[in-house]
Image (tube, rainbow, N blue to C red; front, side, top):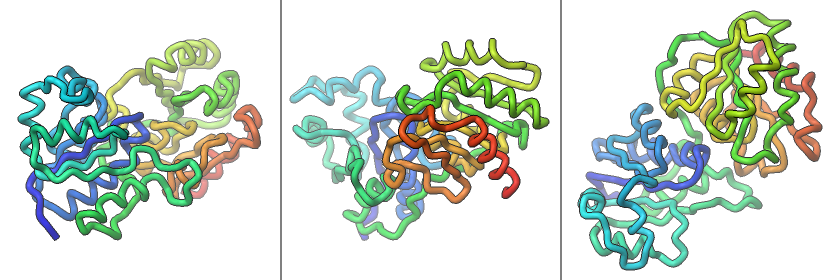
Length: 305
């Protein structure tokens, strides 16, 4: 097996896409230690990999200077070009059908380039993380764990009994907004301990309305935090409830007991596969999931922990 001194993993997409790529970082760390591992990904993703000890250097793919790398014969940023030229293995999961990115890389780098799958098939029979990990077979790496795992310190052990994320990347994946206050109110009435509600810019309005609808005495809200900070807070929770989203993948990868409300997406391909994850499956629409179903799933998960 050839050795590499500096390895770069390039991944676009949403938070969940990046988390499903983390087994590549883990496999590279285990196989090619003490190689330096770099991450080129949308803002915030690399910080999570660094916090987990899986990346040593990071650049933000949506930062200044990267756009020209996606223009044929673009005027490439000198600093970015020098940084890329220092890697001897580059593994890219970018969608690059016309090889614009690949050809620009060749102009400034002699690294070996591996092109991984940018988007596993929705009709596939293998989990997305397995499909992504398979690219390493081209450099003799196989049989590695395909489960994303993130090791970070909790902000405060067992600070929260329950953490929830009432959003996702698509409204069609979300439980109806009105059901979240119902669920939280019933939970707070029948259980002790504090609750954490997390969200980003996309959930800002929803979080305001939830605040107005529930008793806030034992509820904290965490909004627009960095991924490492969000990971530390989720790690401080006994159980997490969310949708088909990147935050749910994050909670699962952290080892947090999770109940995920799941819709039409192919669960075989995209659902977190960790043993501590339970699913509440919608029949046709997310509205078919009842508050009682979610409460029972959470109570069952906690009692089996």
